[in-house]
Amino acid sequence: MTPASNLPSPPLARLWHLLLWLLAWSPALVVLYWCGSFASRLPYHDSWAFVEQYQNWVEGRAAWEEIFRPHNGHPSTVGKLFYFAALHGLRGDVSVLPLLSWGFSLLISLSVLLLARPLWKGAGARGPVLMLLANLSIFTGAHGHTWIWDFVFQNFIPGACLMAGLVLLRPAENWRTWRWVAALGLSVVATNSFGSGFLVGLLLLPMVGVAMPAEMPPRRKAVVVAIWMVTIMMATWLAHFALPGANDEVAKNASVNEAMTRPGMAIQYVLVLLGHTVGQGSVVEAFRVSMFAGALLLAIVLALAFLLVGKARHRGVWRAALPWLICVAWAGGNAALICYLRMGSLLETALAPRYATFMLFMVLGVVFLVAAFCFHPDLRGLIRVPDGVLGFAVAGLMAGHFSGWSAGCHSFLLFHQRMVSEAAATDFVRVLPINPFVQWDSKKHQLAGWVEFLRSHERLKGVKFVEEVGVSQWRQGSPIPDKFASFSSLSSLGGGHWLARGTCGLTKDRVNLADLILISATAPGGEERFIALSAPVLPEDFHQRMLLRRTFLPTILLGSCL
Image 1 (spheres, rainbow, N blue to C red):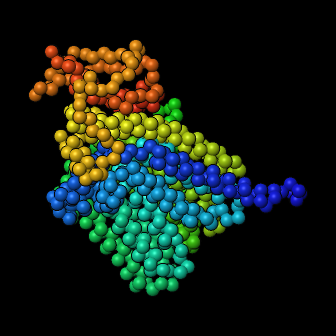
Image 2: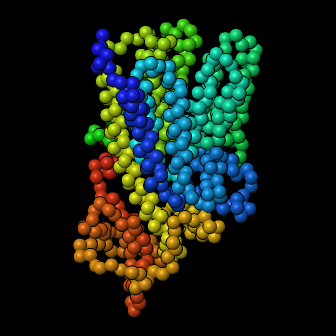
Image 3: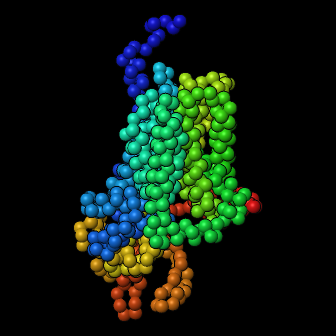
């Protein structure tokens, strides 16, 4: 027995326990700081498409059903409502929208906390350790710039609905109709939030089955399942196919689908997706590490699933394992859909940071499925884990997470610089031509109109329009002797447009870049005037060179794919 004098005093034990739980939630605090400190107050990239729709709505040019029209093939009704609320109710301050991403992630984390409580009852530090592993996945740095992109909060909605639905359907002792109705409502919300949202309703259906008490009459069970399925199918049809032309982009992508003609490449693509939240950031090629991680995670899940099918004897076993199997299925279903619709002939897209919003559920599901087999009262004993294996696995997982955070931080800083440059370029929309490499203007010459619309309705934040492009009208600092610029000869693009390529920079400071580069010219007999703008390019580092290598040499990395 341990001497009583060696045991920590109750206050000290409580303080230690509190510190462990604070450490478990530290990833959430880091991400909250990112979202609050770095989010742009201007729409970024695709976000301007919602500004256009908001303008049409305010000016009476949009029919009511346009709110249900998909964006880039994705149902986005819920996302539009949130975005329009920020434009209308918050007077255009879209910097709050990244906080929605954090809020939905917090909902996922709290759902995991409730689902996993049986794994650490009375087990001291096991709870904080498991929640630290959960939060490293949920608030993963592998999201990179996704955390501060005002448009991508939509990606977080289906996962949050899925986890909240699992919590609602968790109790089986006392069937409550309101829980079932609320979970069904969340499934409908998820269906109208993202292209893969319809999977939420389908994946929650097995949970509905195990949540219904054994003594419930079979006829009532059949009615519950039938209502659920009919509602999900109707919601899916309305979200994807009800409006004319709503699925044209999906049909176009499906007609020339690389995933169907190159199955070997598709399998590798899916594995990279499944493992990419813990496979990036190391000195080893991210594709290979992510593919290995994805294959390992998938092998663990399949082995435990077969074991469950062979040895499960009562509903409690399935009830303990099913939430984590559903998490894995959510990641796998999204990986398959992303592969089918987005792979094309470019493997680089598998590592896009925005897909981490779905792939994090692979790591999350596997970690807690293994934990359930080791610690859950209904599953403990089905497998024997040798001493030291769990510690080794946790160490490897932590290394993968920290590596992913490293790559995510690089993406975060890179795209934040681009956001800053785009915001700075917006000041010049009245006097300089749009630079499509800096500013998002998918519909030619529309950006200036959207900006003017926001300004006229007092919904434009952080922009001070430039009215004068004469260099002499600008306040200038002292000349910097170590600046340089080199341009190649001009080439005509036709229509009075010319292209000049070159490099410029400040050798004095290669870390803190300028927000924007202004290019001036002097006409014969005239004054020097600004004629164009460009964005500074971050100096190439290891991550950027690996990105370029992947983009242009995919076959060298993965070999010939069928």
